[in-house]
Image (cartoon, rainbow over the protein chains, first blue to last red):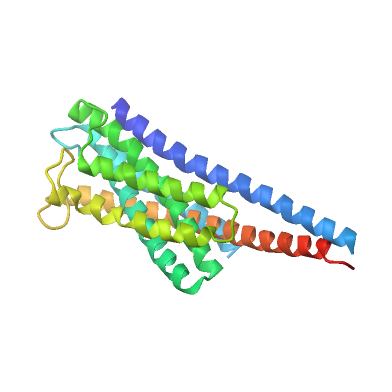
Amino acid sequence: MNFLYIAYAAAWLILIGYLANLALRYEKLRKEINNLGRETSLRN
Amino acid sequence: MKRIFPILAVLTGAFLSYALYLALVVAPTEQTMGDVQRIFYYHVPSAWTAFLLFAINFVASVVYLVRRNPAVDAIAVTSAEVGVVFCTIVLITGPLWARPVWGIWWTWDIRLTSTLVLWLMYVAYLILRRFSTGGQTPVIAAAVAVFAALDVPLVYFSIRLFRTQHPQPVIGSGGSIDPRMLHVLLMNWYAFLCLAALMFWSRYRLEILQQQLDEAEGLESLEMRSPR
């Protein structure tokens, strides 16, 4: 029974971990885009 | 799509919860293995989802090699990454099922080994995409993906073509599965497909944004170099 719960927990950990990783990457990219926009507007 | 996405995410979460309930509570207990056999409801749908995503990666890679369209390249990298996530679940739930049933965590049987090789090839593909900065990276990656995809049919047909430790197919030709188990299996697969579609969409948007950012940064550096 333990193996069953460990397997399900592991699967959910992987899925949630990946979703969290996607959210972090999205946030980082959004910041980079904002920075680039700010730099461009400052130069112009 | 921005407004629909949270609704789809909630619906997918509800569907996954229902599928989990079916797998843990509603599905009948298998007579020989007992409750541990319920790992099947995550192990098999994860494998099917990974195969589907790797097939999408293969098609997108071939199309990219022909047309060199960045949107198709984004589809290729997205499907490979989400496919690796589901393939990782297969490789983790498999040994957790094998240990109580076979008495071993792993054996170098063709089904298990070819699945591990498949995972390694797509991880190599993603490492290439992540750390190679040359302009030819998408082309080289697409060529690598075409070779990696050749392993998918080997994984799928290995249990039919070779004598393996891995169980024979329980559905399709020659398979016999309790209809209640089949229903739970398919419900879990559909739920995983919905989740994979949401992951795919999020990752695809990320890739397109990254491509646009890279393009904008490239243009900016050109502007800075050119004399005013």
